[in-house]
Length: 76
Image 1 (cartoon, rainbow, N blue to C red):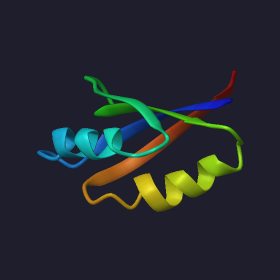
Image 2: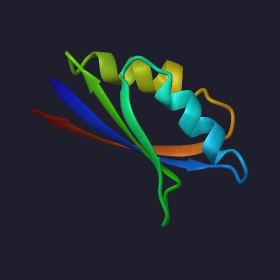
Image 3: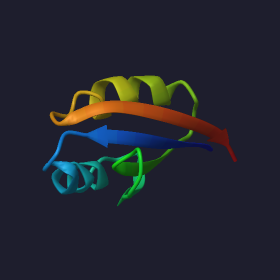
Image 4: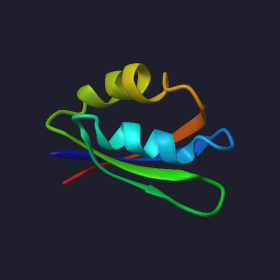
């Protein structure tokens, strides 16, 4: 199992909507609003590492209101 933590910076006013959208996605197991340099921390789980880049590129980074992302990948 591959676990990825995605640190997300959002545009003002859309953080809650993005969290709700993330929580409805198949690979997202948790998403939290946080304080600090990032607005959201999302936890993603996938069977294979190869699934992560495509999911980030096509599902998360394309969401309107996301300014930037940083991904931390860990294998369990």
